[in-house]
Length: 170
Image (cartoon, rainbow, N blue to C red; front, side, top):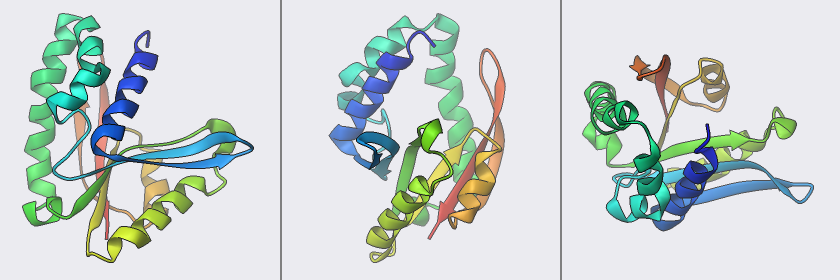
């Protein structure tokens, strides 16, 4: 948690470089934001993105977490992704790396509005959306936005386990 601000800054910079950021403002502040990448680009998927802050954050992680992030995490993800989403789908996918709403603005439809607006824009080309969530609470929320669950695994980290649920729309 001590690295959360540095990590978030690196995430924003990486997305500005190779992705898109969509926001909803309410009362002069950001209420909701979505960070989106068009495959094959992905968050921290290039050395140029990593150089914008992630490399420094990574070096501050303990060796066990570094090993997990570099080796175990990608292996767990790649193994499951291949079985649930076809290459044809990946080739036309926009992937939401982050969807976040400030708690005081939740349940006002801001995230749904952003996603629906973006979906209407890119669906004209036959593209699809993908995302994953590490929270069971989010699955029904995404399903009400038109996403369908495609698969899940239990992600094992050095300190805990959490569900990783993939969903697509389009």
